[in-house]
Length: 138
Ligand SMILES: [Zn+2]
Image 1: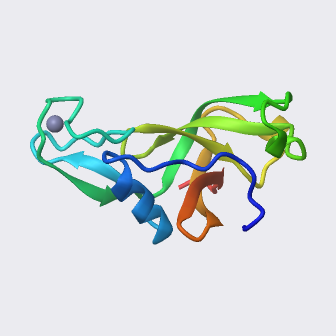
Image 2 (image 1 turned 135 degrees about the horizontal axis):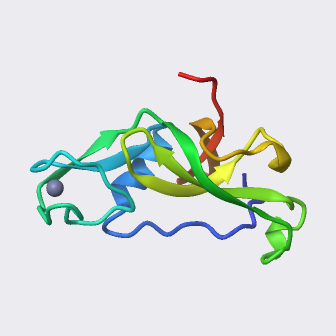
C-alpha cells in the first residue's frame, strides 16, 4: 500500500461522497430525488431531468462488462509489471456505467456481457478503488 506508485484520484466537490463510500466498502452512486434515475460519474445535477435534489445510494456492486480493452503498452512506469491488464466499462445493474479494472481473470477470458461484482482495493490510508471480478450468474 505505502509503495503504491500509480496515479491516485483526487476527490472533487462532486465526487467526495463516492470516495468516502469506497473507503467504507460501499459503492455509492447518485440517485435523483425527482425522476429516480441513477447516474455516474457524479455531478451536482441529474443528467436526466436536471434536478439538484439527489441522494447517494449504495449500488449492489453487481453489473456486467459492457466493453473492455486490454492494455499491452506501458503508459506509466508504475504499470510496467502489470501489463497486460484489462480496463473495462462496467454497466451496473442500476444502469450507470463506470470505468474500472477487471481482476482475478486472464485478459483472454474476458467477454462482453459477463457478470461481474465489485471488490474494494485499498491503495492508501485514505483511498480505496473499486475493481470488478467475474461473478456467478445471478
Ligand atoms: Zn432526475
